[in-house]
Every structure is written in structure tokens, then in C-alpha cells.
Image 1 (cartoon, rainbow, N blue to C red):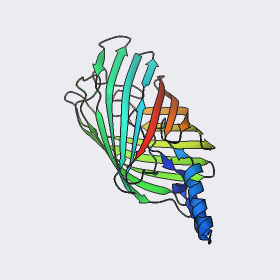
Image 2 (image 1 turned 30 degrees about the vertical axis):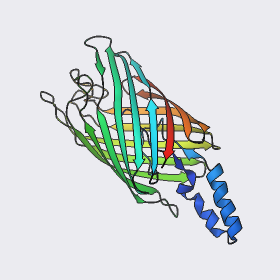
Image 3 (image 1 turned 90 degrees about the vertical axis):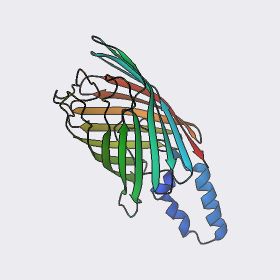
Length: 283
């Protein structure tokens, strides 16, 4: 749910319930015309720069690829990362998502520096209920963080597991998404850590088919004993309690290609800039 980067899907708005309008057209010619028009004019949605997950899963045979460059600055130093995300629609109700971090660079104002690959996250999601009759779409997710980072300043060296619940609801030109999850945190030797609760709430405002304005708030309880907004000095990935806000947007350049950008501010005073690109393939 909160990786520090996230894809989450390019999907047709008619999956939110607009497609039912075509079913009321009795003449076959009008029905065919309505379907063709929907395929040509209905906007696709790209989750970046949101980290909140949605219950709008890709259909079977859809492959979604996103790349992001992250730059974070604070009074404690700077960080850079280059995560990618690849999501595959296995069926119309089940998806698999892999999120490797190809490169991470940590440059604190004091102390040791670190660079290298980050951890790998793999997530499975199941659509439990589609949005209908004013009720939100509901999905179940399970995420495993594999400790692929080779440096203790980048990763903990332990596996984490996070199950979570996702809800998505459309209100006219707005989409709203909410997540709640619980992380079973791997316990590195010599560190006192605890499991965490994670919460996310996001809203999207769609302006036609080409531009979306997005925002979200994220919160999590502390994995370390250090305190709010503070990380372990020996394992920065073991974070204190976090509260994060983000504003951003996405622009559709061509039907299956988006440019995205987000600016995040958290309770430790860190500012994160996240330009990215997202595309969709179909097989």
C-alpha cells in the first residue's frame, strides 16, 4: 500500500459503472455504436503519482508498466531512487504486481552514505466486489517485501508481509479510494521493531480524458521505538510514525501513455518530488 512508490493501473472509467447505460439501448446498431464510442472516448486512469491502491484492477491480458524518479530532500540530507512497477492482469479479478527498486542513493548530511539496489515488493490483489448500486468496489491485497537490498542503510535485510483492504467509489468526475493494512515487520538483529497499521485516503478529479488532479494522505504507526517521524539511525527503513500528504497530476499524451508528477510532504519535514511515466500493453 505504501511502498515509497507505486503503480496502480490504467483502467477504463466504464468499469466504474458507466457501461450499464449502453445496455438500455434496444436497437443493435445503437448498441454497437455506443460500445465503439465508449472504447474510443472513455478516458483511461493511471494511478501514479498516488501510492494509495485502488480496486480498479486491470483485466486479463493487460500489462501495466510504470517508471518513476524520486528525489527527496530534508534537513537530514537527500535521497534518490529509481523504482519501476510491472502489473499483470492474470484474470479479470486477480492481478500480480512486482515493484523492484533499480537504484537507491542515500546522502545524509552527516554519517555514512549508501547506494545500490533496493528491496523488491510483490503484491497480489483480488477483486472481491465490483462497484454497483452506490456501493464501492472492494479488493483484497497481500504484499511481500523481499530483502534484495544489499546495504543496511537501504533495507532491513528482513521480509515484511502486509495484507490490506481496498475500497474505490466514483462520484461523478471524482474517484475516491481508501486503504487499511497491517504490516508484519521483519525483525533485524539488534533492533527493536514492531508491526504497523497503515492507512491511505486518495481523491482524483478528472478533467476530460487527458488530465487528472490527484491528492492523498497516508499514515502509519511506528515500526521503530524512535518516535514520530524519526527513523532508526542504523536502519533508516525502520521508520517512526508517518503522516504524509501529496498533491499531483497526470497528463495523457497518447491513449496508453501518461506523464505524472507528485510533490509529497511528511511529518519529518521531508519533501519528495516524483516525476514518472506509465504505459499499458495488451495481449
